[in-house]
Image 1: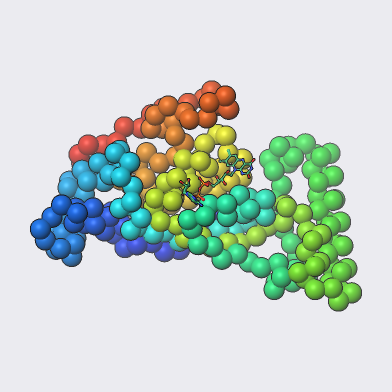
Image 2: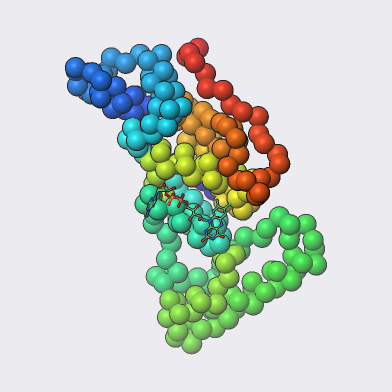
Length: 230
Ligand SMILES: Cc1cc2nc3c(=O)[nH]c(=O)nc-3n(C[C@H](O)[C@H](O)[C@H](O)COP(=O)(O)OP(=O)(O)OC[C@H]3O[C@@H](n4cnc5c(N)ncnc54)[C@H](O)[C@@H]3O)c2cc1C
């Protein structure tokens, strides 16, 4: 799986802080943008995130290029509705030579199951190619392709949606592949907006687990937001 942060709001934390501060300021956001100190930005962002006033962090936007995830994983990803997606089409792209399949670690570890898994995927791919050769449209031939088939997708989310996505999908309750994806996206987003995403991740990083009877029993160590910039 490859996850690349393609683009993001330049200075996302300054934009968010200027927008939030504007609500209580006699001057405009353009002046605030230039004037705010790093300490003020940290203080404002901590307040927004800790108090749950998350609407201002919607001003920061991140676009990721994701490759080598399964269709099973991309299906879970696109359930997150407050995002924009562009996915490689199985209608318009014909896979004539090669199609990669994601192999879950649990299956990789067991040679006999791995063999079975790979044989079935290959057989499905052979069937797909045969249909294409016989003139069937890719949009119909693709019905033979398994959930394991790799895909490429571009996703754009604002920081509020990303924060929510990380809460659900970095959690141990999430399925391993989308959890892996979410953790990689979080790592990239944190490099650009370390204050916004400081305690992003499963809910147990910030408070009690909301999963009730589904609790995993392995709460993470809580993250305390830094109060001053060093
Ligand atoms: C561990 C786990 C197990 C899951 N199991 C299943 C399963 O078995 N079956 C299944 O179908 N799905 C399952 N899902 C998917 C889940 O139900 C959600 O569809 C998915 O996580 C998207 O989350 P969301 O709806 O909170 O967020 P998003 O779509 O990312 O939206 C973000 C937030 O915006 C608000 N919002 C968005 N759209 C609306 C709207 N139309 N009306 C009101 N408010 C809105 C909500 O507050 C929402 O939380 C699972 C998810 C997880 C993490």
